[in-house]
Length: 389
Ligand code: G3I
Image (cartoon, rainbow, N blue to C red):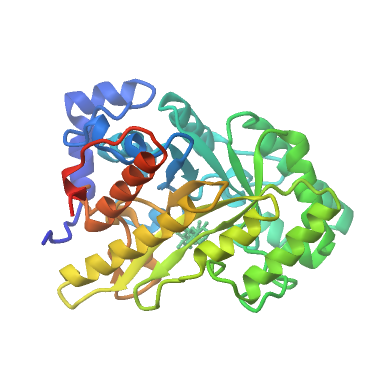
């Protein structure tokens, strides 16, 4: 079993001062060749079926700012190498959220988001944009501002037009509206500033404005606790059906899938995604991770890791089995940078790689499931020893 390794800022600084690191820092973006042991043909993106995007969040901003390490996406070269080598899609973990991209009224800061889009282009990756209308991680000037309804509407319209327009043609899917319902299936009419101040009709406008700014981007509703058929996913089903009947450009529904081995696997995930697909929508898994209660020594047992791997496998299988579910994103790929231990005391080990980027059973579960799907679709079937059993 691999102990969880503490990675210090000193190590990261050492990495940055090596000749390889300095050369790489001067060039635009690493291509993935920086990581020994991750040969191109032995990666997730390599074994994935054609047209199926296996993605991850690009770690930066948010909880990372409170941790004793430099910004992962921009500073950790080994991380960047694995990110490029393994994934065909990247999501902005925090970098496109309002508080980062629109920190002051009338002033946008595109630096962090631009870097992700540039990296993705360089490495031939798709990008998922996250997010345009949300109740959380909004800047203070917005949440505490004293705006009329007309002013707020103009602010949102300008934001969506500017941000979506900037990345026109370079973002495959946008989480236009994020987490607009509570777990009972009620619209967030108090903590979501847009719905509270402008009414539910603003949701349709957000989709219309995004579509005007980039007609090719696929526009999604995204939420957690919507993996199963339940009050919350039912609320999305009803809303989306209604919006599409009105001709509102809604193209997709996505389940974040922040799972825990504390709870049973949402066995009706495939059924749930399928009913949205039957409405003519694309579907996606956008933020999968599988956290667990850690033993006192912090090291998960083999059984725990097997259970976690099974949850990853089942989530991927559900998506692969649904027509139009072609985007599958995990919320970070290494425990080194996961948000989980920061939010859930005593829980962790939620991603598919250890802190030193070595692979867990969950990684192999994803890789083997992707390889099998490729074979089932008559595509390449790489020989992967870890998939033998
Ligand atoms: O708001 C405070 C701010 O007042 C304070 O000055 C600052 C000090 O460091 O901390 C700020 O809050 C942090 C916030 O990011 C700021 O961006 C939180 O502590 C920090 O935990 C938070 O983390 C992000 C979280 O979204 C916020 O909701 C995580 O990095 C990010 O991984 C996580 O991602 C979300 C998805 O966007 C949506 N779905 C759930 C997923 C996991 O929570």
